[in-house]
Length: 623
Image (tube, rainbow, N blue to C red; front, side, top):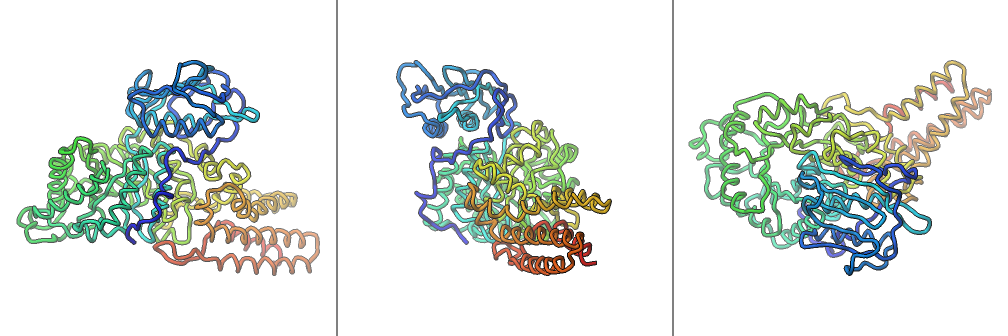
């Protein structure tokens, strides 16, 4: 559905109102965990108590959103008085230059006994320095302290974020606001608006937005600007454009100008998912030749170069134009790619999805090859955790961001993640995307994934543990083929394998240990719903949480039946087996709701692992 105007003043929360999530307590004197992983962070001093009164020092270069966030953080951590007077006592400095790294968006941060200094290479660097400070507050009795560290940090990739490019039921405007704020919090700087429900992007691309739609877009753009996120407007005219028509070229420019006037400074012209074996008008055959790869490349290049020359470069503050080529998911050269490599303006940023639409991995060798084919660094459109295709039907995709090789920053301009129809649930994988694209050399899925879950849990340790159990049951990451690129329920699978190894060897003590984990599965939904977990996630995951409670109960009951049979209590074993069978049927009956392209399906939980164990345990109980 098109964007609709809502109570935006309530929905578009100012940067200073960000929910502050404290990291898990670190050992005294240790280096605190910061995400994305900084390039350099060192323990430089003991923790510094945050006083009730501070002096804030800014100058003409101080970034507005960074300052707003900084003031909000200080107030949320017990500072009652913030003055701008004489620089005595505890002084917090925020500005540009100084000892900031030379890299764009870089910053330095130093915590000393007498205050905190944040220097950014630019406004974004200042903002990211404050986002790091957000993660350095630690409890000091009934008050707060700041970890005594020195940080020098910058991103390895220029473009980091998400692309709303999935099919099926769209995000609401509230979802989009929450996503943009999430990106700013995780130091991601790009949100590509390619919403399939916005007819004015594709089917009706020539038509101007009605004022109501334009107002709603404007609110999103302002939210993005307030969070140092580039709102990239992706217009897809390829379905009907006449490349040789001056009127159609003017229509592209007019559409871009309309959203430029809203504050958009980043634009994309994607040509994905269209045919290049036919023209939309007779004039294109005369201008570019018979339909085919080379002719399609020539036509697209002509439009991209024209928009670059006479729109992008005519607006001093507009970022380089982006595009998604029609051939976006392979490494092979072709007449189409030759046209782009040899004739496309070198400033145009070209997107690529990897070696498949949903690639099982992305390697340096692959990225180097494709950068050679296109004659430039490419921009990875990563189709994870998107779940709008048949192999993902019935699933939430909550596995970590993985199988992307350190060193990709040498060949990639950046990475955007294509998320799920479920926005809040997408933030688990997107957290890893932001972490990796900031510092691919320092990225570890094993470290980043628990941080993503802890953030989702609002720092609630019990809820974080429950989310780990739940996310393990939603770990399968499919591709378009039959073999997933991440396995289902690896933690549970290992526990089940260990159980059967001991059980078959006659060691029945293993039953109690597995039963304890089954109880965690059964109880996880209640803990998640009763904790500090983001309410949007709880709502989106509702069917899967319902199913998890039933599957967990069935597992506990099945193990109790096995225990009863082992001690010779056949009547009890039969009673419990019947009860477990009923729970399995109830679990299998839980449906997802009609919130994806694939419609209403069974809410899949640990399938192939949990259900398989229950079948095997039943056979071991009743023969």
